[in-house]
Image 1 (cartoon, helix red, strand yellow):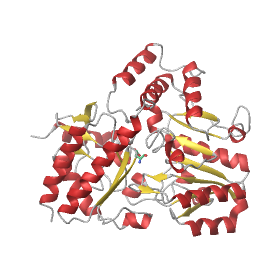
Image 2 (cartoon, helix red, strand yellow):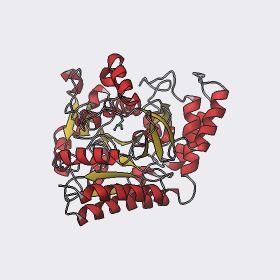
Image 3 (tube, protein in one colour):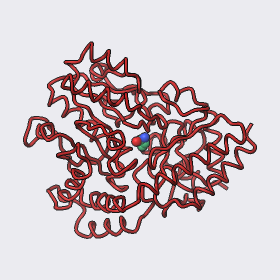
Image 4 (cartoon, rainbow, N blue to C red):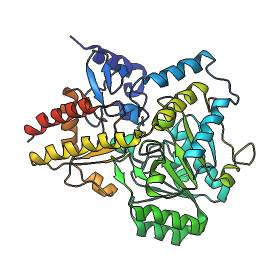
Length: 427
Ligand SMILES: N[C@H](C=O)CCC(=O)O
């Protein structure tokens, strides 16, 4: 008998391209059928055929508290009862803006938008308007949403499906985008040497999470900061993934580097469509209605999304939240590494706060080239074997994983036991 999942997938492909509303949801690179989910609670979610999975995707990062956290659901209910959208300012927007500014010293002003793509696209336009320059620098394997200018040698689904530079982006649009290698300091120095006075912005994920997980070297980020200051370019940290995920002060707090602009998404919306960009007051004041850089959104600052974000940010501020999250994530990656080692498998794993990377190679990657050298076939086998065991990792060798505060010792141990069974018969 055909499963409900299979039926839904077949029907969906008739009316939705590939049957999915975002490419990374398809199992195209790992093979098999994407799973249709019905409900989630804490660290678990259930597919339409009733099977439970431990979730290490967390809706690709936002669910730092796990599924259906009671405080988030309560806030969303309360907000929804007062109306879904006003298209006008609310007090809740002020509260979340003040909170973000108080938590991140680099952010003096912030604007709310509905997705990470919008935040990235708006930050680039703002940087160009502020500097009156066109060129931008991005890094291979970093993903900043699907804005045309940024969809060049991009990570995430674009990399997963082998189209890192998307069709449909006119070459003139991408002509101002300089793509360099992540963690490659000499190439950045050369680009500034050649074009320094034309560079509007450097945009970077301070911990890359869209080409699996690659940590920036502190020297790399320090060099970006130094060169941007020297040449008057805007340093943009894309903290859509790392924001409130690796710590309350985000990756910029971990590295102790102050970007000029930051883009936030995922955790800040607590599972609802909300993102933000913010930074130096003199730059932010170039935005309309004050300045000439136009940026807008009918649903920006949506009250229900803001309610979910505020409830989430309230929880993560509780004492010990990030210490406990990091300890659990560390337990997971160290456990997996140890089991693989016992069975002589070329495997490594590492964590930053509540996010992690799994790699089928001896050591954690430090560059895009290292990521590309991982054994993707081994990842695909591992992914499917874990899925059988009821553990859901991202269906791509190029995405970071996420642990939530709702994962307990029990789920981590179940995951390690499952990996133990799989690695014991690994050939
Ligand atoms: N890596 C992507 C976003 O950060 C995954 C989400 C998506 O593209 O659907």
